[in-house]
Length: 100
Ligand SMILES: Cc1cc2nc3c(=O)[nH]c(=O)nc-3n(C[C@H](O)[C@H](O)[C@H](O)COP(=O)(O)OP(=O)(O)OC[C@H]3O[C@@H](n4cnc5c(N)ncnc54)[C@H](O)[C@@H]3O)c2cc1C
Image 1 (cartoon, rainbow, N blue to C red):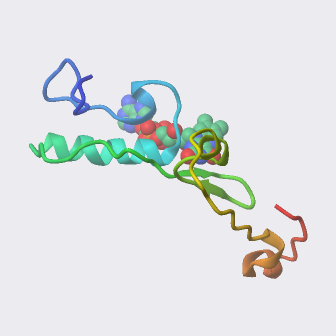
Image 2 (cartoon, protein in one colour; image 1 turned 90 degrees about the horizontal axis):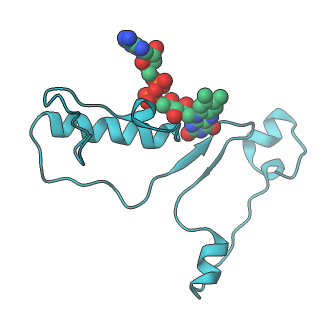
Image 3 (cartoon, rainbow, N blue to C red; image 1 turned 60 degrees about the vertical axis):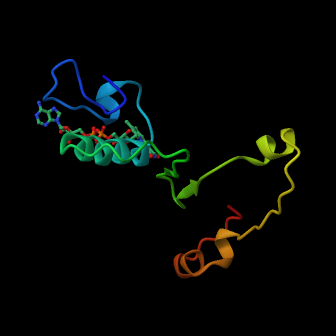
């Protein structure tokens, strides 16, 4: 596989779990989008530096970018915002009272 997701067979492209370890669905989807774009001859795109992550739990969890630990290690100032699940509409409608 090359950087454009082309396999050793030049007319076959591959993306997602089939090319390596299991990875977040968002990464597989973006790889598939890029592979399709490359398959149609585009060269003016590159892999994104950041991917969003979604964890299929209840409630769902998602994140993108650096963690607090990484920012602290790099001396980058940051602010933390917290929204408790019990305080948002979905949590209230479902009657969930957990703090997550
Ligand atoms: C238990 C589990 C939990 C996960 N939790 C998360 C999570 O919380 N968040 C997250 O982001 N990711 C999660 N993942 C990972 C995510 O689901 C996968 O990485 C993602 O679905 C990979 O997408 P894909 O398109 O590469 O493969 P798939 O989604 O597996 O798609 C491959 C498709 O190819 C089809 N196929 C297979 N063989 C053939 C064939 N010979 N001919 C035609 N079709 C064929 C299959 O039926 C399937 O539909 C989880 C994975 C597992 C196993």
